[in-house]
Structures are given as C-alpha cells and as structure tokens.
Image (cartoon, rainbow, N blue to C red; front, side, top):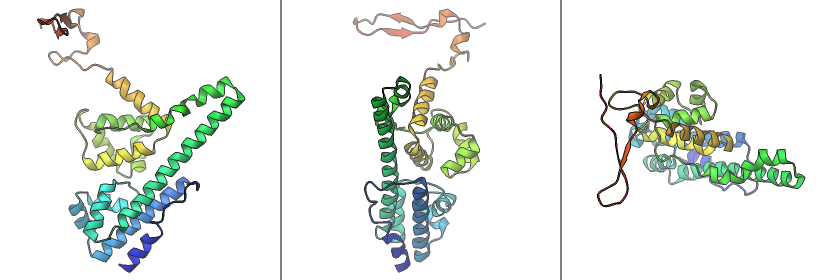
Length: 264
C-alpha cells in the first residue's frame, strides 16, 4: 500500500497555473491514473472482474482505464476509492487529471482570443471573418447533452469526421460498441457508462466540432417523422394531411387536429 500511496503523491499536487499543458501531458496523466488504480487494486487483492461488479462497470472498462485508454466519470473514482481503501488518493489523482484538461481548454481559449485581437488590430476583414467565432467559444464550450442516445452519439462522430473504428479508438471502446450505440432507437437512452464516456468526448471537442455537432442535431430535429398511420413521409402526403387550426372554446390557444384521410 505504501507503493500505491507513493505513486499518487506527485499527482495530488495542483498543476501550476499558467504552465503550458500539451496533449502528451494529458495522455501521461491518464496513464498514471490507470497505474494507480491497478496498484491499489493489487494491494487490496481485488481482481478486475470483482472491481467491475462492485462499481457497476464492465471488466473491459476497468482494463481500459488501467491502461489509460478510456476516460471515466468522477463518480467511478470515488466509488473505487472506497472499495479499494485508497483513502482519497484515487479521487485526488482524477482531480489532477481533470485540472489538466480544464487548463488545456483554457489555453486553447486564450490562444484563440489572442488571434482574434491580433486580427482586430490588423483590421483584415478576412481574418475577422475566420476568427469571429472565437468570441463565442466559451458559449459553445457550455454545450451539453442531457441524455445521450444513438442519435447524439452518431452526430458527435460525424461532427468529428471520424469513421466508426477510429471514433471507437478515440473513446477507448470497441467498434462494435459504437455500432450498437448508433443502432439503438433515437429516443432510447444509452447506458450510464456510455453517457459518461460521451460526456468526456464532448468536453474535449474543439470549437469547430461543437459547432458541427449542434448543426447536425438541429438539422435532424427539423426532419419530421413519418406518419404513424400510413408510414408516409411529409413530402409524400397530400396537402389535405396538413393540420387544421380550430379556435378553442374559451378563446385561448388554437387546437390542432389532423383531418380524416381515406386509405385505399
């Protein structure tokens, strides 16, 4: 247990504000976090399958986390910390990694703002047009998904311009897992494990991916569903199938109803 504690001592120290964070730093911190989990698990004499069962995750997820190939929400680390008797070390290590991610995102935001300020000073219309979106970056960073389904998972993959296999590697899951997500009904929520993985992927997405993600969802929201009665899409329906507005008895909001249609 002393070795496990020593492994987490340095990671518990806060990341110095203003220090440049590179993508390699994030990868290394993620691997270090996974090594800590494996060390505490070995010290406690708990197998991957047992830890998976007690934290409500799969064994493959535990294996991926221990090799730094998969992100997982804070709730897992708090639970694993209790199960393995890590005395808060795993939570501190996760918070260190999370702090690195936040600092990395702040650096990207500062760099884009500086680029925009330089474009303003140059007064170049072309530069201003290209960088104008940087002003709205913080707003776009607040993009969240309340409940992930196959529809949102596919939209994120397409926004990142990644095929299924590459997207799976990016998330630290298998290609068959991604295919299973996307094959589910649009309104059917994914499992909580998948929700957390996709939350982290969305959090790490750059501003261009977020913009495309929102556009894809908006475009699909505007696509009407086929008629429940006949299965026809709106473009195939006769004009008589449009809803008819009626005044409500109390003079309030209008009531919409569908006219009767004859089925041959």
